[in-house]
Image (cartoon, one colour):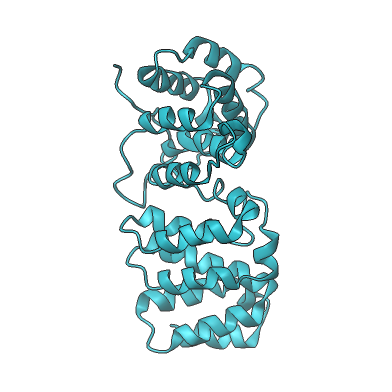
Amino acid sequence: MSTLKIPAAPKSIQKGFPLKLVLDKEAIHQLGENLHSISDRFDKVGFVKEAMDGLEPLGIKERSNHIAGSLRKHLPNNYSETIEIILKSLTPPLEKTEDNGLAALFYMPHCSYIANYGVDQVFNNDLDPFDISMHAQYELTQRFTCEFSIRPFIIHDQNRTLEVLYQWMTDKNPHVRRLCSEGTRPRLPWSKKIDSLVKDPSPSIPILEQLKNDPDLYVRRSVANHVGDIAKDHLELALDLCENWLENASPGLKWVIRHALRNPVKKGNQKAINLRKAAK
């Protein structure tokens, strides 16, 4: 069995290196090798040919979906069986939350596969694939964030998905905890907004309350950005939340409040300005 690995990539976005190139020929070949090492029935040559066809003009999100489509054609025609192979092909979880670079984008097509095919029970012998998809995202988000792939599940079955996230928000792994906040952001950049949470963000408030004092800045930053999202549609709710948090706030929570209120402050909202000053 060959060693599972992911290709090297720059530490950050660099001039002259389009982000889409992280999902280029080398990544596709390595993905084929990883999957073939788990299942010798996997046609890595056919997969690479399929995935490379039409890839060049696509941006990174389109490449991710394109590669996921190629996976669908070359892995078993059963979601549960495919997910089992995919999970066995993963490299070890990330050991830290900062300075991981762009290499983890290798797992973006894996997340796209779950997002695109993991809601449909027809692709799983008419068995509900929800639990399998949640478990797969629990594992994947420890390698590359599943903030995008979790959203179709929130849209499709919000209550059920949130019940899982309410459990995960106390997980020992910071990548899992962050997914609970980042994945439920109403207006997550690069992603389709969640209309139900734009209209009523209250279901995500327990997550924010749980994570506002998280020991990891990576998680607290997500909480701040989530509150910033809420402020775009429900400014008073966001301001009240920050005002309540201000009492006896730790330095870390004060940072969350200041970061969350950046846009209202820029727009000259006086209450936001006062709260941000009080959170110094």
